[in-house]
Image (cartoon, rainbow, N blue to C red; front, top):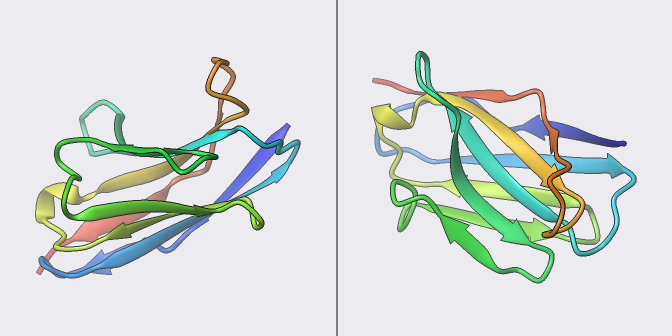
Length: 118
């Protein structure tokens, strides 16, 4: 089992920044994949950004150029730096963990609310 603890959400004005963190514990082996998803009210959950243990990243079009995903393998922690936030970024952000790139097994964090509003 893997446990994920997220932090860093909150209320921010349009154009502002937030940094989300997600720490993984438990049966965390190397070669895992960590990602951030988000779900806005009334919408489906969508991928925001993903990073492999080697540091390969991919982003949703809506996140490119504004968000940066990174990780600290020694701490089993993934980060999401969000800049130039827009009201449409408002959502619950979820951390996702897969033990490897080749498994469908996944774990989810409890979610952290990000609200972008003036």
